Length: 513
Image 1: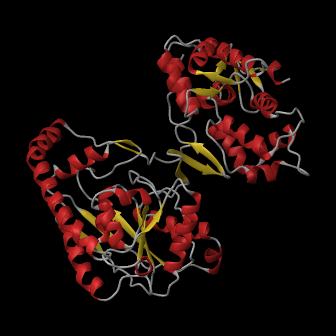
Image 2: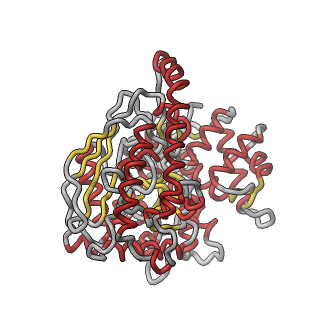
Image 3: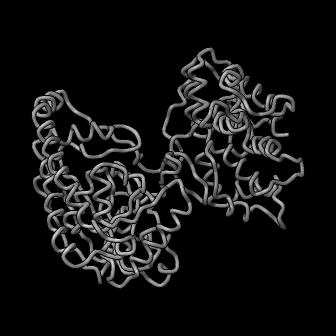
């Protein structure tokens, strides 16, 4: 059995969420020698500057009431403390090896562009952009206020704070950002990273609409690190932030280029549609960088591609599962038998579809419990998993059944009351199982497939196989291995629901009855 471990069909562009610093032996030796000297020296200097910054930053708002703190700092508190913190902030980055920063273009003033949008976002060292931006106000997680020094700097900056766990906090932050951006110069200029997370810079991921909700002009700002070694990036997988800091400080110096592009003024259509506005600015910045503009986002700490409201994980849990089963010696017949045991368990009223890790190992025929734990982790955050999710997603990619047959089985599994139609919630659960990832935005699909409030299996199949957007999901993301087919008992099943024997002659698929 060949390995299933191959790039996901949902990934049209390079994976932007993985970065690994690749060193030759000579570079590694050089890094160890220089790092043993420069790393402790530079970290000590940076720490010293941070310790100086800490109390000065706190002094800026010292003695002010809550009401006074809710307004922009003016007068002597601004002209006295602002240049001191700006100078010390630059000194921190000089101590870390950023000796020179090349600035291209002209930073727009507050009246021209109330907000600067910066991309690509590579890591925490990107904050150097705040120096040529004159310490523009930022948006940060509220949890960061408890960090030493960082909390003081956020207070100094009068940052907009948001808790990602609290929906009410997000709503307040949106209202606060909109108020500041439309204050006609009352509040200072803001700076935002619209990608919302860090990437390796190989592509721009989908911009979040926060910076574009107010419908005011923005100034795009590009960040580049033109160095022989790409050391500054810290992403979802690969080099850790400690390794990034070590590799960066181990260089004699690190180059950075900041380019201020012309101000982008939105059209009336873009003002009315923040997502369109964000997409157009993303495309403009991607073109200037020479990289693709993608619909990739981080959702629940998982990188996904957005398509028609659906979230397609870049690293398919089903493909990962098949790869693990392959490495554990399970051939096609064993995988098919495991799927049969799984569907029998799901259709059993006594046991139900929920299974523990031990039960999952038994159903899959695994002797290694650690593999079962790993597979469980692909689909669940606790120690139990819904077997319907594993069955449907793995069966879709295994090639043992046609898509029509699989959808019929899945529809039956998620039609809890046997009505012959699915509710909006049940459709979300079904699509989540099919794609191996929770789906929270299936309203568009439900509207396309339902008729008079009823979503039947026939209507769902029609939309998934004929609608241009959802057809892509079926034909690309749910494509079985081997260019659309996987040999199953000597016969290949394609996504059109027909079976062919090994010489290409059509034959009847009993499983599609």
